[in-house]
Image (cartoon, rainbow, N blue to C red):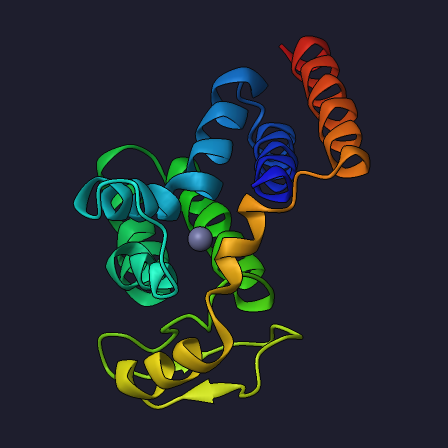
Length: 177
Ligand SMILES: [Zn+2]
């Protein structure tokens, strides 16, 4: 999530410099785009009453679809809002999917709706490709849900890094406002 916010700031700032438009609004939109696909995690939490089980990575089945969300979504926003917003949405969400391909869960359905398989480059995943949900579930049953790790990740050092990083983000937000 922190990396997504950082990438969003970078995309928004670059878009602002390229287009000459004010940076504040573009940065906020880019950060929102970089985080947007995970709204399906909130949907998952509501549906499952806050329980995060070993299949929780399946929240991604809803919005983690690069062709539809980045491609079609970006084209729609370019048409309805502005081309620069369309490009920001495309890059922000695309970044999110690339990031998720390397971390959390067992892959992204990069070719949905044309192919139901999942692709991952996560170091802990025993496979790079799962043909379908059944195959992915079999691995999740055996290995557990890697996204559960964030619940037990709150060791002191990591907490300190996160506080420092949040302060740094606040400083950046203050400077570019
Ligand atoms: Zn995600």
